[in-house]
Image (tube, rainbow, N blue to C red):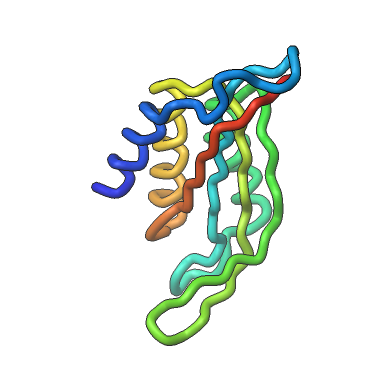
Length: 131
């Protein structure tokens, strides 16, 4: 929980890497990637229907302007063994703000609570973007 609070604080206050974007139509924004593992310890896997419902009821209301979802194969080390699991990567590009940090935190919390997960990976990077 403390790591999530520190991450969200960094997300809300991190400066843009690029003060000036190379193309006139672009603006400085933040790209956020959320990594969702779909294995539920002792309970199987988050089904495609459950994932679609989560995306529709949690992610879409937070980012109605859009986001991208990529199917992935996650891998991590649990003690001495390698664990592999189906995963989803949600990519969001939006202006940096404390509201963005709050939305990302709520999405991660909702996934952990709904699917009994230990964590949701969150990666942020400053970008220039135009839509």
